[in-house]
Image (cartoon, rainbow, N blue to C red; front, side, top):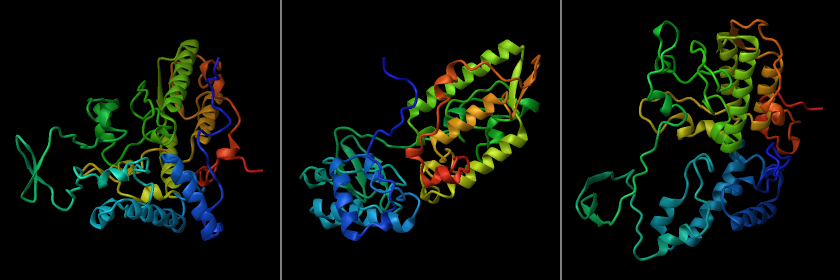
Length: 334
């Protein structure tokens, strides 16, 4: 039987050494190896690539050099070269992707500079030129992490809707609940690791935690659970503080809602690390759901029986601790 709990390893090679401590020759060898392997693990070549702008510049320069060496048309190559913090947006790390632009039937058109004018029966028109197409795939984006909640009129205490409460940005306690909205469970909501963790494990951990909470409510006769305002405020402040350590918080990406005009710029996922977050959830649970009000419970905030969350009560994986996790101020450094 495969072990369902969190393994004491990560699932791709990761080098915790800072990039700037390596010589230029050593960095190049390392980047070549990780580039050849391909995929998102390219960012695992060094441990500080998303925390130090100087370190990030070294991998960005390497990637731009690679792109210019692969794509034959200089103008197309420049369009493909990232000009933002490298890795701040989803990577197009080479697995034959850049070679595609050397094919005679492939042309890259910068619609940021000259937007699409109109669609016709035969294709699309940009800057007066018709580009014949058989099919069009529209990458229109989405309201990450809160879009599904926005589509439902969720009304809490005093008639306040969740959309109204989150007008200046989402506010939650642990990404699982929001004060003023009793019995509203959120799976991988804003303020939890969510998209910055393995989504399957993140969802499983939330479901296990919530099922144990509901079982505890049944055991104690509680009618509702609700996050306390003070604890929610402290958690939101902590999420924002930790996010400042990462270069991801500086970019115009969907992580901060930049893809939706008029949306508040707030870094929504918790970047302090999944193991650290799980430990926090365990502590909240083990102290009788500290930070929550269990209304109607016979023994308010009594220690619950650990059921499904038993598999998450494991030591921190110290071999994957990142600078962001250290910034979370919850890592037991001894």
